Length: 328
Ligand code: GDP
Ligand code: MG
Image (cartoon, rainbow, N blue to C red; front, top):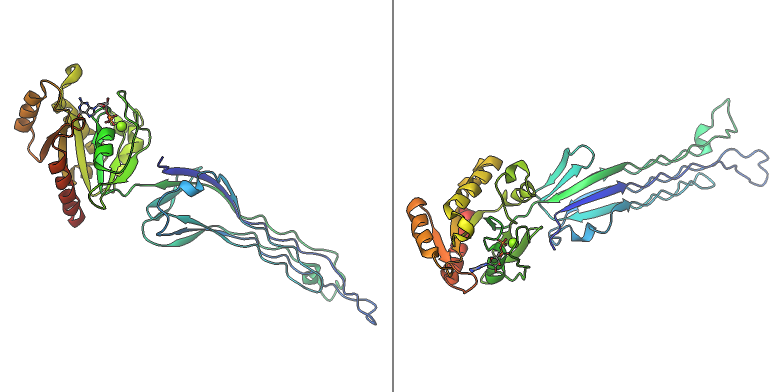
């Protein structure tokens, strides 16, 4: 399963406490203060790592804490600093403040950012010594580390995004053309997460975007969630059920899809695309294919995923589509 959103509670390390201590040396009857400062708490950093491709490794780590600083010691010794912690992220991760939704960082290229600062250490009593105050009985506590609740959101950077109505055959097509084995079901929203996989013939990353229905851009039926995923893909494939089953009009389906994309972000319609008309094995599909071709200009591929018809030319076209997409 592809995880693309993770919420984390981060707490940087607490600063170590300052201490009260006195010099106890032979022949020095009244040794002065010598309590050291506490060490600094560990900070938390976020950094992109090209080896990391998902947020999977952070899924079961809801609470993340950096090491605390150690307390100060005798003889002015400063406590050890807490170790800093770096969370590795795939590039393409957007970091938001979970409380306000504000975007803190967009890790598009390689970078590293401090997200939570470690607390500073407390002061030992040595620090409070003054001409009028030779034996200060004071020290301060280390400060708490910065705490923050964040949401990580990974936008898929697939080369190609499949979009279609529920049941158009996207998942079936995925398992036919990529290495992904996906659940296929004859009901809407079989796929709750976008599935990503490489085309069987090349390193073209294809994302199966779960069913878009009318009103998706207004966040109906999880649609908005999914539209997000195709924002950065280079090209789109519309998957249309051409069977006309249950009185559906494939042309309507196509228009609804385009309208949803347009309403979400009209630039999506400028991406290179091709149209797959699926389920030509079903009786009556031919007429719909004819009608579709008359009404819609553009690269159209009638196929039957079920019976493996028309798949080879489609795959070649997808390779080219990626190349066209990459040039844009
Ligand atoms: P998705 O919702 O777009 O992912 O669609 P699925 O891949 O889950 O398929 C929905 C239903 O359509 C399933 O029952 C599939 O078996 C069926 N289906 C997919 N492709 C074809 C096809 O080429 N011909 C026929 N007759 N049925 C198909
Ligand atoms: Mg599906």
